[in-house]
Image (cartoon, rainbow, N blue to C red; front, side, top):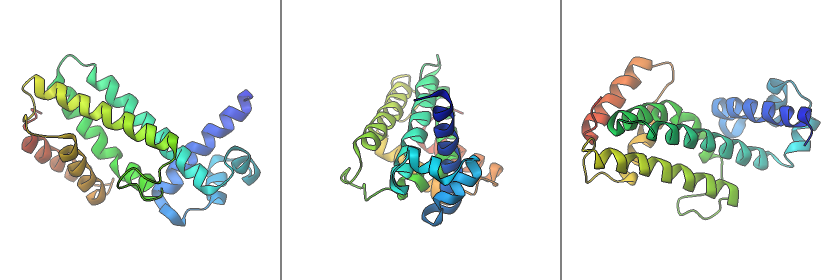
Amino acid sequence: MRRDGAANREKVLLAAEHVFAEKGAAASTDEVAQLAGVSIATVFRNFATKQDLIEATAVRYLEKLTAEALQLTGSQDSGKAFASLMRTLAAAGPVKMTLLDLLPSHDDGEGLSGPVAEAVDAFRTAVDDALHRAQAAGAARPEVTYDDVSLLLRALAYATDLSEGEALDRAVGIVLDGLGVPR
C-alpha cells in the first residue's frame, strides 16, 4: 500500500472509531468520510462494506488496548500495573463495547471474523496475564477470574458517561477495592 493510501486508511479508521462510538449503528460511512477528510470512495476503496469498516475499527481498537495492557504488565509492580490497566480499560470501555456491539452476535465466539476473534483472544490473554501477575504478587484476590474482571469492566462501560471523570474514578476505585487491588 502506498504511503498516502496507508495514511488515508488510518484517517478513516480513526474517524470511524469516533463516529461509531458516538452514534453506534446509526453512524454512516458518509460521516466517517467527512470526519476523516476523505471522499466516500476512499472509504470504500479501503473497506468494501460498512461491516468491514466496523470490524477493522474494532480490531484496531482492541489491538491498541492489548498493546497498552502488555506495556503496563511489563511494569515492576504488578498490583499498580493491574490497577492502571483497570483504569485504562474502564475509560476505554464505552468505545470498546459500542464497537463490539456493532459486530455479529459474539456471546459464544461464533459469528466473529477471524481477525476480530484473534484480536479478542489477544486482548483477553493480555488482561488475564495482568490479573495472574497481580494475583501472584498478592495484589489481587486469588479467586478472581478474567470473567469477573470482564463483567465488572462491562458494567462500568455501560454505566459510564466519559464526562463524569470523578464518578468514574470513584467507581473504578470501588471495583479495585473489591478485587483486592492496592491503589
